[in-house]
Image (tube, rainbow, N blue to C red):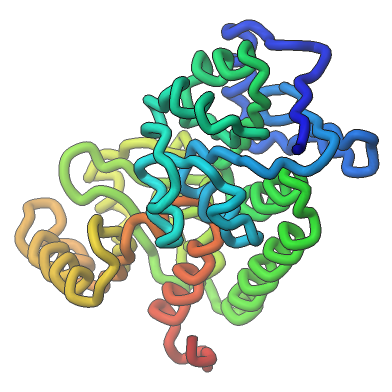
Length: 324
């Protein structure tokens, strides 16, 4: 059975953990040639093992998706959250609670060799697991598209699946590059202005440094939220309207079905045409709306690349795309 070994440095203080968690995009130090292999996570904690972990608990849906995508099935992923619903096999795995409220007792009962976490999980909870000598590896999943590729490789490495992790990352990188090459020759005027985010209330949107911003640019668009001061922030409607977006990129909750998508699109179009502030914009007069089921876009992982490909075809159908 694999042996999880915490670093001799032991657990660090919660104040230090919180400070480390502020940094975005820090690549973990991975030394696969070491004996045993040693991995330093996004919070500065060290994990090593004698043999690759065989019992893994995932505390985030996107981590679960990556695990399955690199060949970890339900015999390896023994626990995940109640939000982990893709692939379908993930639903049949033992639940250990939610992202912000995982159960310590449920995880301990599963006897994991490794727990994978992200900054969305409580720092105090990770500390509790470490005090019980349960190896925890925290991954950084915020940042641009390149961070998604790093995430895939990192999960592959820390689980002992270097080859499938690197292979999947290379495949995703190649697909993104193929889209970028196709849209690279577009003049600025041929790149539609795109708004992603809320249409009512606090207009939360994705600014520079986010994978959404990268996705819009790679697809051949211009993100109107590039003016935002932070990666994720709320903008005033006046600031968005001043940029005169031409395309709306959004998501809808629930089932990923064509019917659900059409219903959601109809609601968005109706809002854009009738709501004060939006009605007088290009989006209000001539709505161009691209919606996708929210989990496919809002979970940084492999499925996001298919969204990029579809969005690029939507923005620029005349670029001679191959059929998906």
